[in-house]
Image (tube, rainbow, N blue to C red; front, side, top):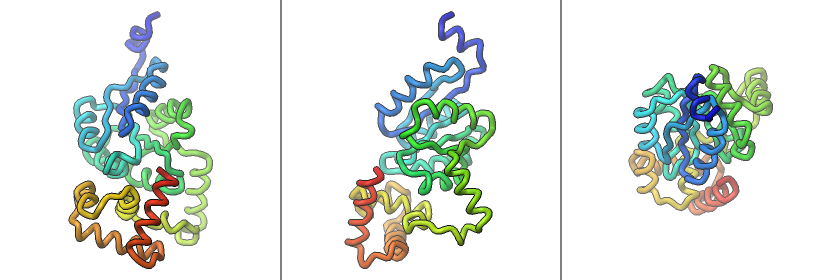
Amino acid sequence: MAPGYAKMRLAVKRIVIVDDHPSTRDGLVTRVALEPDLEVVGQASDIEEALAVIDATRPDVAVIDISLKASSGIDLVKAVKERFPRVRMLVWSMYEESLYAERALQAGAMGYINKQHVTDTIVGAIRTIFAGELFLSKELSARMLHRVIAGKASVAVSPVESLSDRELETFRLIGRGMPTKEIAKAMNLSPKTVETYRARIKEKLELDDMASLTREAAQWVLENG
């Protein structure tokens, strides 16, 4: 039986992939194509393009990367949840779960997966969230349960984890060498607001000056991507 005919007879789950690396998107498209009940109906590389593609294709699931050129996948998750509440979202990223997974869930995603484990696991993750269930690793599930039992304030977090979503995105863009005006444009903020975020980040990370902040952010991006 031809693959196309098999897909026609199944209840095919429609998927949009949002990632700013074409080769990564192509790899996931190839993997998804092996599944008779999954079909990629659209691709995008940034927030504006993603919202247009989702509006045009109305997928069942959107797979969204955290790092989208000069924008944040977390902001996209929030926008999709508001504009397309029926679309279920799976966030995938090179970043460790401890930094972004809970942020993604709070923003409206139904799962988080690290790209290091994406090849076969992502197919199961897509099916899990399509079924209306959360997809979490055992480690993240245990971490979140511990935070509930022990109380959020009593669970130690790293200084970077203590940053708000906007502060973390500002920190990431600083690390990529973007000046204040470019960060403001990318995040749709005023330069004054970005400077406020810079000051808050410096204080939370206990850095002496803005030069130290720039070095710390650059090192973090080098280590985390």
